[in-house]
Length: 309
Image 1: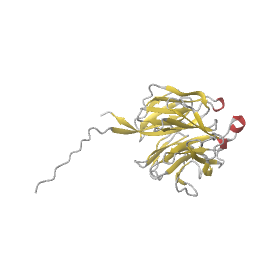
Image 2: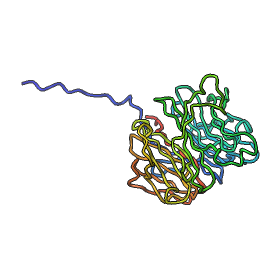
Image 3: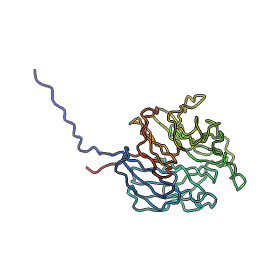
Image 4: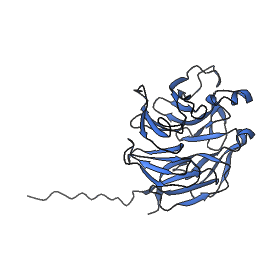
């Protein structure tokens, strides 16, 4: 009986990638990149003006990040650079956004989205900074700005239903933090400050900060920098079958800020203000603090970067 033919698969054309983290060090104004285990740590950008949020455009080879600036000066900005820190440029100039925080990329529409804390709004623009617009406005002026329940901090987008989720953190440790959702686009005939499609997803949270969405499993994750037991945590909840209370999956953070997901790898990465970088499975098990005392860390992004063959 003849032997079956042997099928040979040529994998030489497959692009190899390496998992990299990009981490913001607020106090030093730096952006660091490293392997997913913390090794091969390099500083790629310096002299940032209080950086807070970061996103990676792997296809274009760019990183985008927000500079909060001094909150009472309305001097926030957004910058872009190559993955190695080269070709740095300003995308949104100082004063065009007040205190930009978490930033995300919607690649299909070529848009950047971010929360503006003291600006009390959610904004977006094209990748070159053009078509700057406000989508959600929670307050206006100095009087409203004193009300921290109006402060927008973290955000993510559910592309399946074209919904945007964002946090309004509230005063420190006050239990008045909330997560909202609305359509990405403002309803016809309405304005950012008066749109009718906004709903509360959760309220009464200690102090929710950054958001990430597991699109495959339809689960929202977020950091909370408020007081224990519900604060200093990573939380999650289904966005289609929302439980009465979110599930706490990671505890004992020291003011958790940034979060990034690697869903295929069943892992998350978290930064806190005490300077630690953590990894854990998506259910919170296997938590490991693999870097600590790294300065005041804010945003974190995970990306799989193509490698030359």
